[in-house]
Length: 82
Image (cartoon, rainbow, N blue to C red):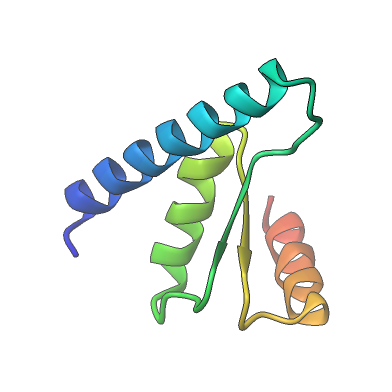
């Protein structure tokens, strides 16, 4: 998928998530915006881009095939670079 298509898809998915979240909030149901993907992209830069684009829209991303320990290690590496 091209980067422009990726950005467009994230924007569309984020809009769908927020539409759902808002409908639940109107019903008085507390929810948190997030998306769970079954597999991480093979390209780490693409994975970070997806996470960044969703984060800009206030949506958490989880990759089902990434363990908590792997995510923590990746987060520590990202923080060390910053």
